[in-house]
Length: 82
Image 1: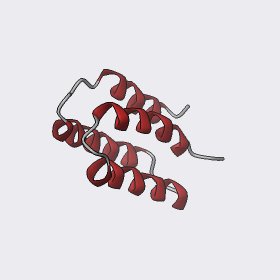
Image 2: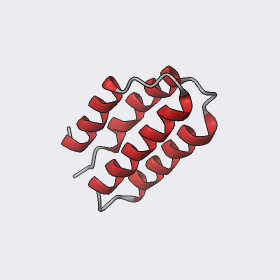
Image 3: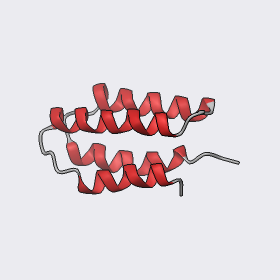
């Protein structure tokens, strides 16, 4: 697994905010750093990252654990293909 993706997943495991606002700000910052570390991004990676940020910021109903679980499922799909 890409080390940057693994680092993001490790962050999710140790991120302990219970307030959704704090959680989404912290995770969004790490998502932006992840996207920078994976450059150049394929069109699929770019689409997935945009979709995840939109879900994180606007679509989930303030449930930290649901979003954490969703991110843990989706982030490994950003793995660059050869």
